[in-house]
Length: 472
Ligand code: PLZ
Image 1 (cartoon, rainbow, N blue to C red):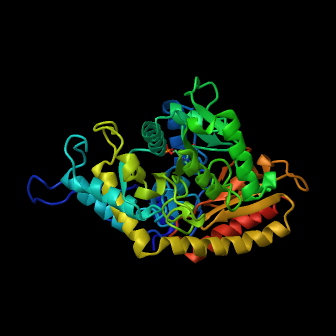
Image 2 (image 1 turned 60 degrees about the vertical axis):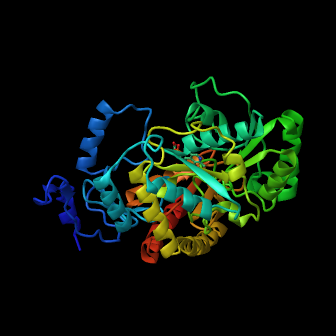
Image 3 (image 1 turned 90 degrees about the horizontal axis):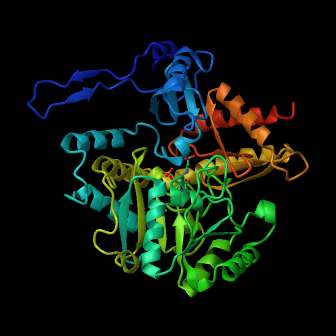
């Protein structure tokens, strides 16, 4: 196994000519030794090379794009990221729910290499290729419901959401889009309007797109309502402030991600879905953060016992390559005129190849089952910790999507400072955890689903002691 010192001296992938096998022969990345799946800190954090890069960054990169950790990454494998100073860090965030099958999964590396050596772009709207079709087949087969479906592919989550709204408006002939408190759907103009939180996503970036209406959601820890009560409140708000016949779509994350890992009370989503069906409104499930095995099922709506109309996907679908999708019933998707949807790079062949390889790994390794196991292990430890920690208001989530909400002890007042302190303490020990929440007071765990139990245990131990130190 590579030692910390050896990694510290490592200079990154080297390129060489792959041999004289004719014109198709190209540069090949030399295979590197495997990365030991354990945490190892060999410099101060950030180390000297990270600091150097950060100085260059400050001079070159727009400060509006910020990073949680000033540790520059050189390699990754499984649940470990190795920084440019040779520190091996446990990744409990998966780059926000993207690296679900682990970093540098060999199946994806091979598929991407193979595809990029054949062709990397035609534009599907000009010359089609099988990978795009195959990803749509996978999405149609794996998203909830066994009705006939169609999919369209895009580059990012925000773009998928924008297109779901376009499709819903066209298919219903209506304009209003209803979203809920704490929602996050992206940073483009329409999706900023759909996103709830002002800072940092919206502040002074307006004007925002019209015909977007925000209503209450279900947040059991803060509203104390059961699913039926919360749904009744939401539906009454829609009917009185928007009018049921005006609503093209109700767009909602089945578990809210950026908003705080909020799991709605049981029955809330199913009741809204039933209302949508009755009102001729489309229920769009934004499964961008929850999808692809993260919550212990392929899609989070599967926990709720109803089938959404449209599903948006991105993040975990392609192991880090940019790919997103909208999937829905043939009758809805077929309503859009020829040429009405698209984009230069949507469903890019390399991203599609990565997605097909990633989906195969999820299926082969039953990563939904792994997500449930991770959830059980983490919940056992965190639920016990919550009992003895007055600043933990609630531990919640499904599968490997787990949130810890922090409050001022003895109250429900959000405690963002505690989250900042815990995240910094974990990072100093080489464990990367990230936050979320409208009030910035939730720690979220999104480990790669392939993480070993030993590494998960180590990461959780560091997190637990950082939380215990809050009281010290
Ligand atoms: N819908 C449910 O979680 C992306 C945002 C990171 P894009 N969440 C991470 C940041 O601060 O920009 C997200 C999501 C849900 C839509 C999106 C948007 O996906 O791929 O970032 O556009």
